[in-house]
Image 1: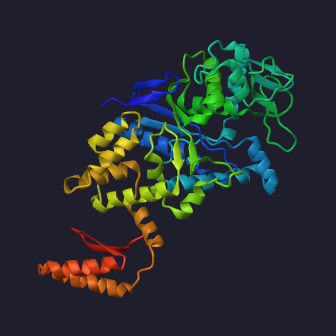
Image 2 (image 1 turned 90 degrees about the vertical axis):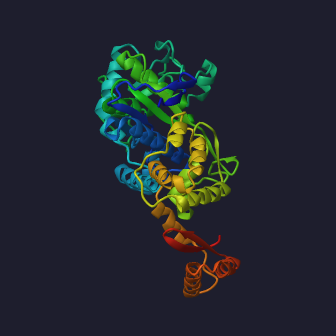
Image 3 (image 1 turned 180 degrees about the horizontal axis):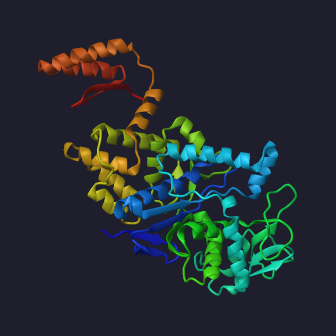
Length: 448
């Protein structure tokens, strides 16, 4: 079955053809570890985890390499460490640990490699020196800058007019720039900031610009050209545009990655998420109230390229949907998507269609296929069950009395006294206690 992916660069869905089917390679921009990740950060983590799972299904787990970086050198990191009075390393170690715990709770597999920016300074300086030697970068006032006019097709990914790129570049207007679009590859470290020996004979210690970090880490772990580069739509410009410029110009390559994938924006309850509006929600905040599996399903119910509105109502609906799946699915199965689900996912990760296909498995014949599909997606029965137990409303009558009535009902069913069985069920239902019969017996829960 062919896998089709929407390529942002080509602006169309393309059949995925890996450079080497025995070594499929994907890079996704990861967190800047200075604080708890917000719920918008969870979207690319979940989306590209699902793509990672799909690629492993299609090509074999041992043939897929997924790299998601950790940015641990950044202005925000420096400021937050100073604010807390702790070392930068202490801050980044703690914050990364929190991020790792959060994404594990979301049911995500660990990437094959999670490189840290600070451990790849040598690769960054090597790339910078290549760019200077090739005439694509220059040294000025202890900075090294990429000369954007040196790349004739700069801007192909974002396809923005030049004036829009200048306005949205988020680059400092500085006297040492030859062109307003030029961006920093390396800059001198300020007192108290982390610094490393600078490239190109610069005498003072310095540190890398943001964009060169990802070019260096992807080169180190995936090569000069690889299969898929992913991230949020907000990274298209300037970050991914500048990554392309650096990598292609350093290696004289026609492409940095053959497929560029971007997930859409996320808003909260119909509004853009921001601290000023009081609707800034971290993954940790959401996980206090909802199991990671429900958060995961809620994210996947919207196609990854579409905007998503994050609402409590949506989470409530996702919990009901996931519960309905586990109520029917068999207890164990090999992690494998059902054919109709796989077909939907191979159409540019069409998760709404995949979830619709999963509803079609909610019957006796589909129990095992549904269980395998849930396991493939990373959904865990025990995680949902533990959450439901912890968040279940208190029963209106003692548990012992509920169990006694259920036992009486079971005896009535054995005796084929259906009227008595129905009476007890309806009596309990009137109290808000819902019974669920299966081949494994009868369970109960208090209606929410």
